[in-house]
Length: 211
DNA sequence: AACAACGCCAACCGCAGAATG
DNA sequence: CCATTCTGCGGTTGGCGTTGT
Image (tube, rainbow, N blue to C red):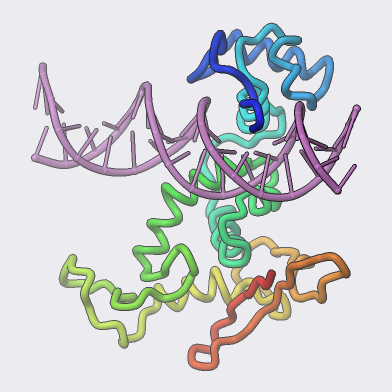
């Protein structure tokens, strides 16, 4: 059995105080990141190494961007999630200044609802069965016919999915996805392949990740 | 004004994989 | 190789602020 990363005796838990933040920042400014297990003792903190790492990465790092997500960042998260799933660190890696924790929280608290409200299953980015894409303008009921045209839904598809087709001109104004990680033959030893397919019924593109 | 319900987000937990001896 | 330690990731929880009744 592995030892826990820290015993809970004598370590603080919960929210960080300003003094703790300052100690951690001062220490890392002088000694740099790394060797998290030894940092608490060296920095005079009653925290475990994991807690220090998390606090630094998610909050104290000077390049962390705080505040609300912009529209283009949200669009990018949706497109990357369709591509990569819940691989928050990879998604965050394409959003400068954003952390995996922040992206994950934003997804769970905002984007998941947004997609559901549009009739998109946030887990697989497919149109949900038995759920209307087109909420009635005269009723709050969710059970409404789904075969009528809908500008919002079409716009959504154009924005989040069609927009990620790298071969097309990006007319949506969204940042280029830089899809160099997609649609290429895996090198020896790599076990993932990304490719795009097009739904023959809807002509909508789907990005597939093979492992 | 008081309480309950809800939503957001910082932080914790457990696990897997990488690194090290 | 194998065992152990360390790091990073994703899921989950709990506290707090806000909104509704």
